[in-house]
Length: 320
View (cartoon, rainbow, N blue to C red):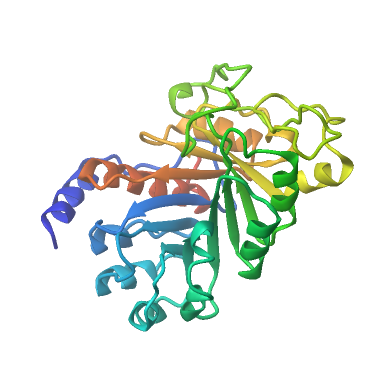
């Protein structure tokens, strides 16, 4: 066991191990954990829960054997791969048959079918920038299980939205410039505010907002982070909203999914019991996402999140 793993075990031993959030009982949960491959395999194993989705960032296509064994414990996992993909890279993942490949759409034209070496396994695709018909065709050819679109300031149009809605798999939209997005730029949040619930600093402080179109008559109309009246989107795109999740920063008021879409909330810091109850009571199918640092404290915090949610699923979420 490495020094990091030993220190992490000590931190976990000091953490409170009481029951789950008061008043919170869940049939299940979805917690997306973005983790670097440098994390010790023993520590990584401790993050595998019934509803955890692992997103493993890698520096190369070759993983340690112990890391592959830890990945295999997750009910859903995606490992970042880049071309060129050699047979040895694909062979190692055969020990984790449920693990999927995480690829960038920009690599799909580099070497015909390089990703096919991985065999019939789930694929998650990140699309950065414009999502036009050609990009959508390449992505759709993979029959992806998950697609994340991260448009830039001038890329988020109704035409791109239409392409996203028609792609297979679970779709996530990340609007640029909103808190917690992976790129900064346009779409400033409006109607910012707090829920007034305890723990608002972590799970309830600012509204990212939802989709609207400046002009529903053109496919080049921009998507914005303002409120969206029902009449703004064309009828086919209104129906498509239920098949897309928008990712928002921790701190979004929890009055309900924006514009009829699902919601994935990026969280940070330790789990707050009261804020979790408020969030799940108003948006029962909300998904959570946590960027996990490589330091012992950050890894211990990720473990706390898994333990809290697992306790709620076991029915231990109500204090007696």
